[in-house]
Image (cartoon, rainbow, N blue to C red; front, side, top):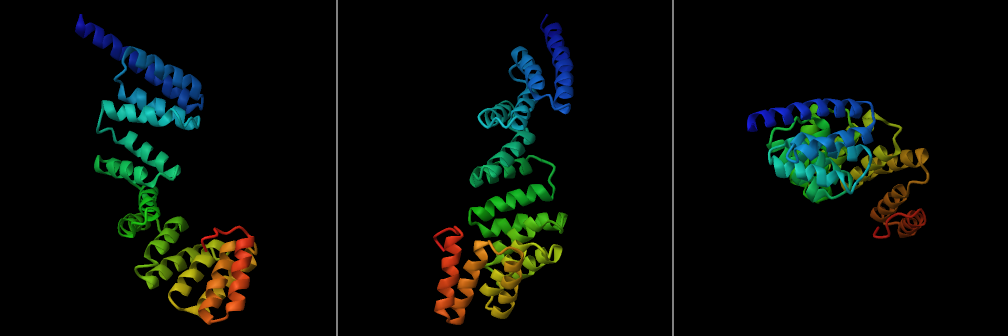
Length: 252
């Protein structure tokens, strides 16, 4: 009787899972969700059904339900790396960098398929936590897998800035080379030159960046720091005040 019952539940779950997956692939997330819920009523320990439930809530942008569903999948199967990976991505997106790094590292340890995007997110979490060592480690892995993503290059530049300004310039210049019309890339490169005491190159970058985007408050902040380094207090204050008027963070 037990064997027959288990086989019956298994057959039911497989058919419903296939149906739910079809709904999900068609973008009908409410129907997919209802189908997965039917599976869970029969078998509340079905890890895949909980994971797919989390995916439905994630696509529906239901932030109150997606995390609990993924965490339930993990409680049932502590080695279900896909759930860890999704949790890592959600926490990263929500700027909870400690949790984001924790779940992504756990996913990697359990054998998740990693790519440049995975390591970019993991390294960026560490960067925003102020942990430049692990940030560089994972961002360089991302760079090895894809050397054409400016986000990775810029975050590597920032991670190296206090440790090795010349290496920082190298990565910012790589980002600039990918798109010489991106005002942010040029401004970042200029800031790295400024921190490396290469004032002439810094000024050239700030001038280019300002032409592309005259409303970027960070350019005026950088001009202020440039003129401060040159000993011109009047121009330094004028540019820093412009940065404040353009609503830069007042800590600058």
